[in-house]
Length: 225
Image (cartoon, rainbow, N blue to C red; front, side, top):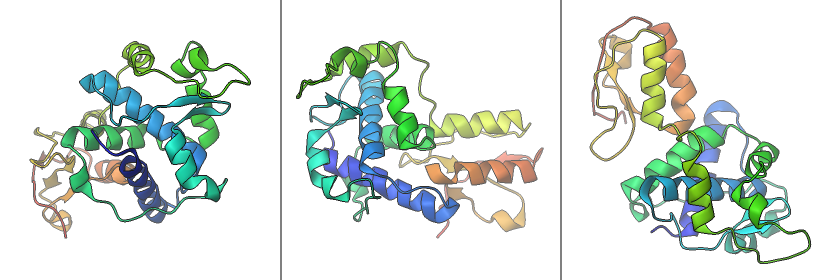
């Protein structure tokens, strides 16, 4: 089980990388809280165990991990800066869930994620009572609700789907031995040995597919320095 502060910091790190690469938005506490909530929900669905042990409460603006709110409340509505990330603190399953949640939900604004978490009959909606505090959103309610939703697409599934849509032949597997999704190299000299894909690079990868549509690609686990 992961430390919730480490999970939060990894989301902040991913947001910083995306902002650097694509002029995206840095992450505020409001958005971070929603990312933690969705990570917990989908990890419960996938592996029948929580990502972290901390309680998630139903607050006015959505699900909140109180310990993380206390950690970053001084930032207010301003973006939060990440600390160095220790990837060894996570299991491969935990990393996969975090990356998949970031790849899907990270494209939404904080207010957009608030609306998603507030949808009818959601775990938050069933737990929230105006004016009351410390209302827990139970792990069972999160698992039961999201088991009834379409499954969260994995990073590797998205790459495979995009390639199929472009008519590109890809030989599986798309996951390297250490659990990282990988963009296979092809025979174009400028691609070299291939590279490990990060969630914030998915859109770049799709652009590359567009440029080389129809080419045959082969898996290559070598990482680019």
